[in-house]
Length: 407
Image (tube, rainbow, N blue to C red; front, side, top):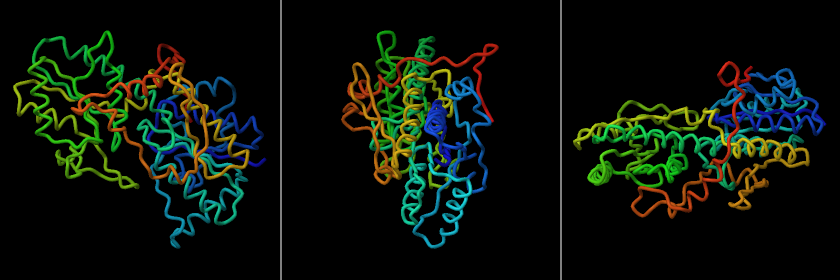
């Protein structure tokens, strides 16, 4: 049957290791000789840094610990493979396929988001060009929930749950003094506002919810923002606002760039975004008679293993298993998609999509899911997101702290 290899790439999530567990267990059950892991994704593979996963996942307890351990067990990278059609990239791809041959690899799995699917597309397209027998399958992962051709992505449900819970707690804290206060919470999301929209899930019978949500899908003006805050504070003293790190001005610049802190770019040309909430809090304080506070959830929203959605961790495992099934049945150049069957009760299944229909594309929030005043989310979003945050999977606690497996 040959061997399998799996890697993890891009930003980690609290359930990405559940997908790794799904790939590993399914590949072993279907008869793979060995299942190798790439250390730090394709970048580590290019440096021949791979491990035999059976040396680390020795029993069912190790597998269960892996499922409940946040972040990327194998490490990650943000490495952009060159264009396989570029003559200068010939050596890179010849090295990759020669090393795969040395390891007797038949099945190649990559767990990640948009940039990772770009890697799978390039590898599978090159493989077809040179008549390689290796099957390449993309396994979805991203808290950003911006992959196309799938209802949602593993990682999003748990991050949304963390954001909803945290916003409820911030709202409770923000109201204790009864004085004018504006709290601005910065949430991840470069071009798509799925994570920031999850702040709307804080609202319920026991919580009034956030007062304003600012998304990348809606052009942002500082003047309009100040006017909205002024109007809100004429109605109540304490205001809590959820803002995406990627909100943009009408000219296309990110609001955080107004900080003039300097924003480095990664291999894919993505600017490092930070400081949006800090800038807006200072702006409000200068223009309105109120105290302000800025909070950046930062990496907490993606690595909070204690706030994992059971729905999310289950689906993460399932897409790993579905990827192996597809590869062992001869598929290549595919992406495992989640298809929603029903909301009540919530049910989903998996299906395969051509990787070229997914790579380098982004799914944004439908504009009709945002209220006309661009401040809150419509019922359609709540009905979409609520099933994804249901139930919990408690970490394995040892001495009062969660137990994690690591290399």
